[in-house]
Amino acid sequence: MSFDSAVGEDASPIDDAALAGLERRSAIDAVRLRIGTAIFLGLLKPGERLPDQHDVALGLSVSPITARRALTSLAEEGVVVRRRGRSGGTFVADEPPRDVLAALAAPPAEFGRVHRLVDHRLLGECTMTHFAALNISTEQLRHLDALTARMAAAGSWSEYHQLDEEFHRQVAAASGLGGAVDAYLETLADLYEYFIPYPIDSLHASNQDHIQLVDALREGRAEAAVEVSRKHVDTLHRTMFMGLADGTAP
Image (cartoon, rainbow, N blue to C red; front, side, top):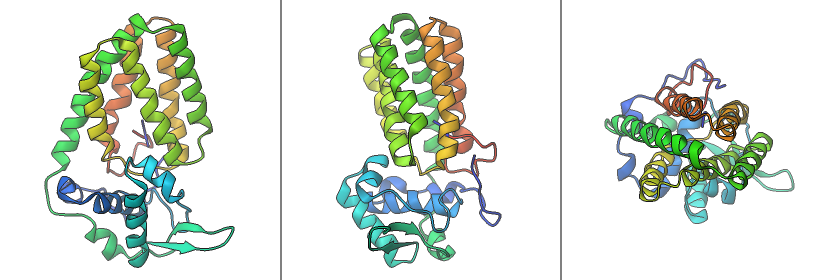
């Protein structure tokens, strides 16, 4: 899932302190953190329009009321602005206050958890992919092809994230591994709680991994499919909440 990133020159990568205490935060504060971090890193640009609150909720896997309250709070603090009318919506402020963005981060601790979740997902992803290459049906391949086409056409990070999650769920289902699939999906859900908005061009570039994976699954090339999955997930160690210097996305 890779989220070409252009981090502002004055934005430094988020360190342990920026991730700390995410589990202790309310759902509203967690959304504030994720959107604020994306703005702090320059992934969401000044003046950029956010998806509507319903799509923000779907893209970040929270309830619409949580998304609405988080966006209202960020608007009150000048991080985003809301405009009415036909061309209205919620936009990143032209000059979001850096002190407010910095305050969204809490003291040390969650960074290690993120890396452990990436490692757990890496193990599960490679296992799911290997068995999917052995067991996937023609219908499941058609479904994956359709998902990659929809991701290629996605116009926002929210739309892409939803399709991305469905893609990885379908690959896991194709493995036929039963309870192991459930364990993998739990890890996937835990990791998705840390995802932040990324530029859509970067996400479209990441979708090339999905296309390569489907091709390998279609041809029954298990080793090649596993290698695509391994590289795809391993990228998260360098991109999640980081400067995304290599221009890839989760």
